[in-house]
Image (cartoon, rainbow, N blue to C red; front, side, top):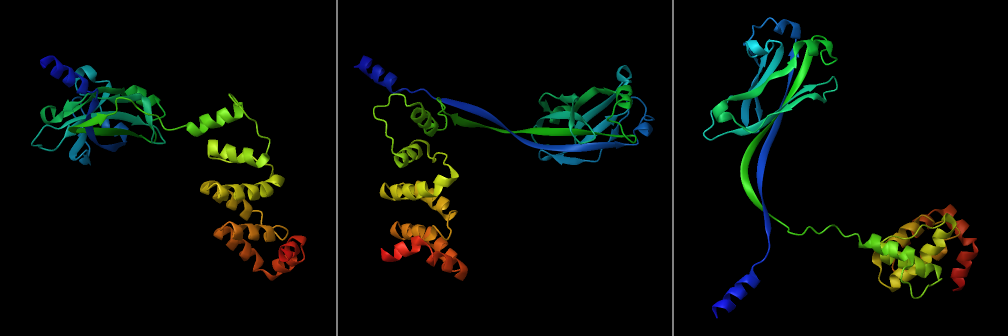
Length: 297
C-alpha cells in the first residue's frame, strides 16, 4: 500500500513554471545647460543643482559639476541624480544619463546606465566622467553655448509572481498551411475543374477569395454568393455582397436586385434600390434586356 500511495502521488505531480517580475515606475527629465561657457567658472568639486522634478513617484534633482567632481576628474563634466525625498522605505532605482543631439535623440556614445542603487542610503549616483569638456566643445552637440542631457529614472516597485506557460502555443496559421496545401495539390485524390467550386474551396482553406480578373469579378461574385448562402458561409456571402455593390450599374442592377431579394441580402438590396431612385438611372434600366427579362420572369 505505501508503494502504491507513492506511485499515485508521483503520477499526480505535474510540471509547471512561473516568473518573479520586478515592476518599475518610470519617468525622465531633460536638463538644458544654457550659457555653458559661464558655468566653467564654477570651481572644481562644486556643483550646480537643477530644479526639483518628479519621476517614478519621487522627487529628484540633478547635480552638474562643470569642472569635475574632484581634482582627479577636473577635465570632465559630471552629472549625478540625487534623491530629495526622505522615504520611509528604501528607494531602489537605476538611471540612464544621455547626451542629446539637436533633434532631441540620445547620443549612443555618451549614454550611460547605472546599476540598481538604493538611493535611500546613497542619496546620489551618477557619472564623474560623463564627458570631457574639450570633446563637448568640439562636437556638434554644443550649439549657441547650450547643450542638453536626459535622465531616465526607473524606480523598482514591488515584486510579484506570474504563472508562465510551460509550453508556448503560437498563434494559429492553419489558414496559411491549408492554402499552401491547396496550391501545391500534394496528396490530391480528385481534381475539380469547376471554377466556382475552386474559388469556394480556396475561401474555406484560406479565409479569403482568390484573385479575380476585373471583368470576371461580378459574375463570379454572383455564383459565389449563391454557394455561400447554400452552405451557410456568412463571411464569404458578405464579401460577395460587397463586391457586387461595386458593380451596380444600369446593365446589372436588375439581376443583382433579384439575387439580393432571393438570398436575403438586405444591404445589397438597399444599394440597388438607392441606384434606382435616380429617375435617370431608372429610365436607363427599363431599357435594358435584363430588366425586361426580369419582368417576364
